[in-house]
Length: 233
Picture (cartoon, rainbow, N blue to C red):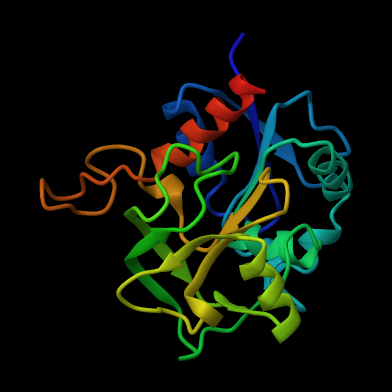
């Protein structure tokens, strides 16, 4: 039986179908979930996709963090279910206190879209185990509220407990503290990041590489990592 990975759609989600396609490309079965439901439909893992849930009113991800399905996701995450938050999904995870810190307006106050280099800093999570620590990858980035922030004590804990999964390499595109692009929780099953791995899973549609234009598929390994983690478990 195929691994089933749920992708939640919120009002304003933009990349839910892309995330479903990425799940399928990795060899799993994507399952569409609805923000207003309390049913996770028996999935093995969950993805919170990118977009502008609820129009980013109040703060990006703030209202979505209170959606009915998030109570089920919190319970499942506490039991070890892999949960991935991409861009707006990352914002939801910090607003729901499943990950530490917060995300604020980009330092230059502008929306940014670029193919972004990242350094892998923790490859021991449910969503990063197909990478090597220290490896450099390229993942598309697009956000307006992507600046990671945290107080001194929180940042000390994040670094002390090795909770940073990715750091921006070459350039910090949004003013994130300590170049932080992605985080995990203490148990390694919840991961959030601002770049969009679902846009780098198919040759011809990903970032350009030295080998060929649009050939980058570094994002595919995020979804393959989840399958690997579930099989090992």
